[in-house]
Length: 447
Image (cartoon, rainbow, N blue to C red; front, side):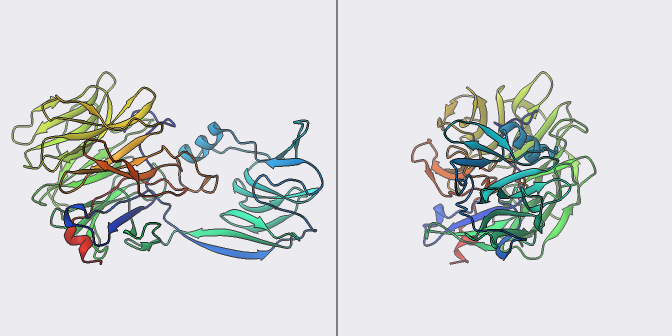
């Protein structure tokens, strides 16, 4: 992870993830994808508004029924980042703008993050309070509607009914999801998943609540059953991105703090799949994380940051010696199954893009060039394809505002190992990332 969180930050908040398994795909191309999707189930609810007169709501930014004015929430991108990334309270107000003159009128006051305004009559606007002393439906006339976390409120024409989405956190591991592509099956998962090489086990990060919670590491059967906590987490430290050794007899992961304010420096850790023999692999000053094994199991590449040095390093497991692979703003390295290349994400020219490099430091190659961050790349089991998360589609809408999704714009893409043939696999308002490629034996059992 980069040392400071910015809008360009490739780290994705990992509430939950998706797995896609292509139906009837050749075994070498069978894979699983995971995405940062809020771990909740959404249901449509309809209930009567507190009161209301005949109106003409048409969705966010609806026109006033009798005048050419548009309501909006007046939020800036900076405000949204404060709320979504750091949980900093931000107050917003509902305002209207005269289309002809540009004159603005403020209709609300006081605390709370107010979004989704809709005209219900000339003098009454309904909206949603996403954060503040009270969350739920409210009106510019001072009365209130249903309470609780909700999104996308839409009132009926007479203003007496409102339909909205309400969500919960009961989203179990491997729950099947709707797929927009009949070629693929989707299932939900905890963040930073990693399949064992025999396809029988799945290691995941359990984030808990909040970025400063006590993330832990669990191992379960590939179908999501028989989960066992193998690293319970530690106060003031993150535990991220577990990775299996080629023989599936060790798990490497990062432990420590990655974001400011810095506390315990992040270290690459090793432990057995049952959680035993836990020990530090890296001990130098600075922050180390996001390990990836070489196919022969003799080396690990990882991300390193310090006050004066950053880039990728490779550690030799036999003698503990390290070599510097890169010196850029680099992160999320992944060793190819063939052992000939290492993919990673680099910040350059105002964007995060995906590169490959040989383990000896030669042959640097940039694979993505489109506007928007590209990150969270992972190799297919045969090394012919790379799966990654991209922000090139931009923001979709305000639906996920303040709902535990800091950057609601990334989609999953797949490309050939040389960067050609880039194509999307998802297109939604969520942030899709931290993918895991399912071994053929795992996915074939599901079709």
